[in-house]
Image (cartoon, rainbow, N blue to C red; front, side, top):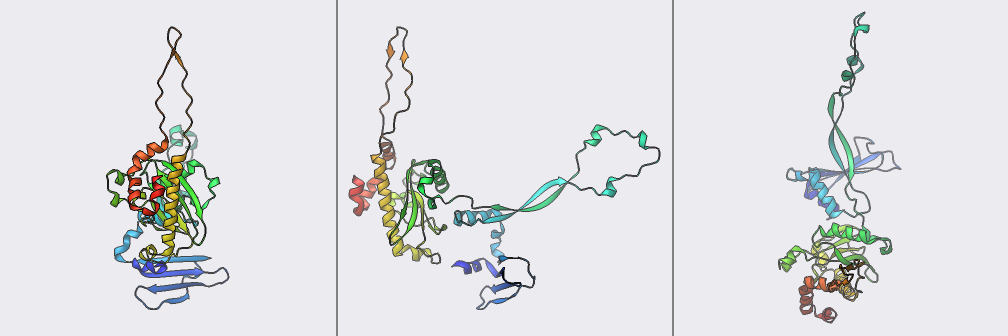
Length: 341
């Protein structure tokens, strides 16, 4: 796990590094399967100036990782919200005017012809000859902000909705409501939980066992998994993020799933999700929009217009997700009373 996972796709790994306090650039190199490694001065000299360069010499069956599309996909999936910018060098071909040398530009003139030559406007405005030039530029891939790390008072509703669209990938409509909190105590973590306004596609088709978990687990903004069972089945429609500094980065997912820390986080998340549903049910009825101007008939009498009966937003939401909540009353005995309220 970690650095040595590079050998899953590489036969050889080279790490060149140059300290700002040293005049010598060193290189570390190891072959896949070797019990030793090699360290020494870099024969290329001081090519970095400062910093570190890691080079993967890929296996023959791993050339898919040379594709910019594949690299973008991996960066956006695992490092979408890391603090440090991750940039990918792009190769682009552009058209530029071809440079004309001074000797080609100057044509020999015969004596006495200078006054006889007329230059038309069309010749003066002729388009220059173009040539293709290959350029290299860096594009930052992880541009989405980790808004869960900010103070919630500084985040506008539009930002919360925009972040929901990023993590939901358009499955679930807009966010009906959300809760943003920091859990502090023996275990510290930050989280945003969203209640979607529309039923996810898999749940609409009754495939609750095939529902993908809607919560992403991060450790210090690095994605660990988006398939962790952080919510029970009946709350699988809840979407959001969980980020904890207390979890280790260098363990496999199976071990992490059995971690006591994960069990504590799960318990707190379920409690917060139920509290959010309860808050939605207790919310005040939204105020009426400005009523239309009264209409008067030809005789000057007021025309009565029947106004539709107002329905609380929670009732509309419950009609879509009520079956899942009822399932929770059956499956989650610890929270049965809270769900029935």
